[in-house]
Length: 315
Image (cartoon, rainbow, N blue to C red):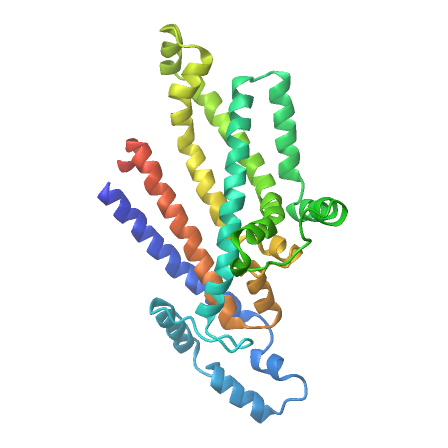
């Protein structure tokens, strides 16, 4: 197990190194000068040059990359060009919106998908199964931003059960904060629940066809007992991978939903940083999100290997 974990950790480090090079290179080739953008069209060349020097944009690419990576390794993500505050402070404040939103959406997705997938597998080939598969296909096909706007129209504009957007902050209380995150979480959870339900159904159907399930049925267990006692546990192994990937997506890929609901999260921060040419925020935030995605994948691999010892053996 330790050898497996070490191999995955080494792969994690290599992936982060490659990702850092790609992120830095992509940001560097983006046209436009941040200093000129910040000072406006009427800025003098002297003022632009002075600001470039202040922002550290006049160094060589190698010096700037080394300074950026060295700072991130020590917890110094730099200072935002636009907000004039450390990037770490910006990320810490916005994380308290994006992380609860991702966990909320993941919880809703899991609570919906597990029983739905279980029912579809138990009634394979029947009308219930076809109905569930059609509904999940629709859930995957519907864009989450369109569904988000529909939720706003119904529950915020017409019924007035929720606000149309904004976030009161956790200082206003857990109830108002969770209420503000409910519609965005539902909009994010719908397609993820549809995907997870289909994976759950497929994994259960495959597991129910194994010899040990037929043996359990031959010993007198009902189909429901064989499913809940034996098949469900083994079917959860591939589902773990999907749940881990979904959490990574929900944390790093909620840019559109956060902008629809005007949530001050990481997605909205990175969108604002791109439009304002705040390159240090873009670089650092994207790198942190990549790290979060790779770390979650690493943890899922470890959990997967713990559940299935065959994966610990090398090829």
